[in-house]
Length: 584
Image 1 (cartoon, one colour):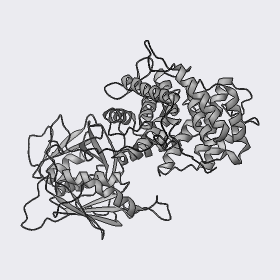
Image 2 (cartoon, helix red, strand yellow; image 1 turned 180 degrees about the vertical axis):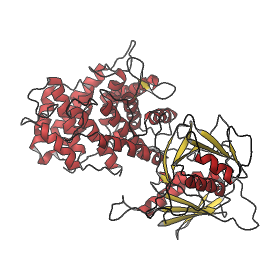
Image 3 (cartoon, helix red, strand yellow; image 1 turned 180 degrees about the horizontal axis):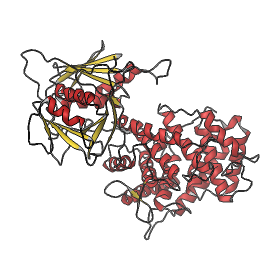
Image 4 (cartoon, rainbow, N blue to C red; image 1 turned 135 degrees about the horizontal axis):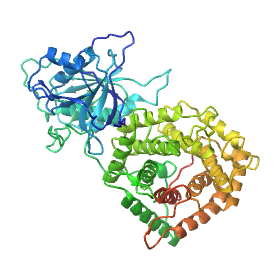
C-alpha cells in the first residue's frame, strides 16, 4: 500500500516527558490512504476508547497500553469530531510509552477521499518560538486568516544560521478535535513545519465546548484572529463511509492573473494585451480544445492513460501542469482527483514509479507538478511534505557525474532525463523548498556534454548522437541553463545552442517545441520572434480537427498521445504567459 505526504506539521497533545537529550517534535509525516491490516481504535465523544474486535467500551489505560505494546499492524485512530483534545493527547502519551512509532488518524483528504494523517511520535517535545492561543471568545475570522500573518511572522526561508521559528498551539484540553484540526491545516498552509499542540486544563466548572463552538485565536502579541462557528456541512460524522473531518476550509475563488505558475511562473502576461488578432484567437481555441481532450482522457480516479489505456504518472502530471498553466488549481475537482491519484502512487521512499525505463523522468515530472500545485492552490501547503519526499528520492537517484539516467542502472546519465530533473529541482527551489544541490553544481553536468557548436550530446564522452536526440538534448540543456540562472548574454555556449536550435527546424517534436519555446523567450530578441512564429504555426497546423483523435496531437516516438498533447498545451500557454528567469 502506498502513502504520500501532504504536510509536515508536528503535534503534541497532553504532556510528553522528555526522554531524549535532543527531543524532537512529533511530526505529521504524510497523508494518504488508510493502511490495510491496521488495528482500529475509536476515540468517542467522552474520551473513552473502543478497539475494533473488542466488545468492551471504555477500555482502561492499562488495557490500551497492553494492546499498544502488542499491535499486530498499524494503529488507525478514528477520533469523533467532538472528542476532546486532552483525550487524544492522553492516547498519544500511551503510544509514546508503548514505543508506537506511527499513528494513523482518519481524516478527509484534500481530494475528498477518506485517508489518514500519519503521525510520527518522537521521544520528547521541544519549546516553541511563537505561540498561537485558542480561546472561547468573540466572533471573527476563519482559520485561513492566519495564513498571511503567520507567513509574515516566519519571514524569509530559514537557514541553518537563522532558522524559521517553531510554533505552539495552546488550547484548553476540552477543545474539540474538529476545529483544532482546521487550525492545524491553516498553519500547515502557512508553511509552518513544526507545530506543538499543548492542552491546558479546562476552566473549572465550565461546560465542555461543543465541536462547533466559536473559538478565538491570537498569535503572541499580535491582533486577535478568530475561528468562526462551523456550519453543518463543515464536519462529517464518523462512519465507515465518511472521514472524521476535512483538512481545509471550503475553497475560495483563487486565480492567478498569469494562470498557473508553470505557464505562470514562466508565464505572466495573459490578458494584458489589446484585442487579439486572428492567429491569437486560433491559438486560444486550440489550447481550450487540447485541455478538453486531456480532461476527457482522465479516468474517474483522476489518472490520465497512455495509448494502451494504462494509468500513467507522467501523462497525469503533465496534464495537471497543462491545467495549472491555464489558471486551474486544486479547487478544481478534476485537478484534486488527479492530485489524489498521484499521491496514492508515492511510496514510503518518496518515489512515484516502479523501477524501469522512464522511471526517473516520470518521477521528476510528478515532483514538478506537485511543487507547482502546492504554490498556487488554496491548501497547497499540505502538499509540501509530498514534494520533499519526492525531492529526497530524486537527490538519492543522482549519479556520480552529477546527472540522472532514465531508470536503468547499467546506463550512464543522459541529458534529457537530467534536464527533467534539473527543471523539477529549479521549480522546487523557486518555491522555497530546500534543495541540497546548488544550481551551479547542476550546471556542471551540462558542461560535460556540451560541444563547441552549442549542441549537447545525450551522454558524456559520446562521440556521435542521433540527430533528433541531439536536438532534444540541446533544447533541454538550454532551458535548464536558463532555469538554473545562467544568462545567454554572458555565455557563448548558450548563444551557440540558440543558433543551433533555430537552424534545426525540429520544433515539430513536442518536447523540443516546449523546451525550445521556454528557452527562446528567455533569450529574447530576434531569436524569440523567429521561434514564436514558426513553432506556433507548426503546433496549430498539426492539431487534429476531426476524426478519432480530434483536438489532440500525434505522439512522438517513445511517448503517448496524452503526453504529447499536454506538452503542446503547455507550449501554447507559454506563448502568452512568461516572465524572465534571469536578468539579461
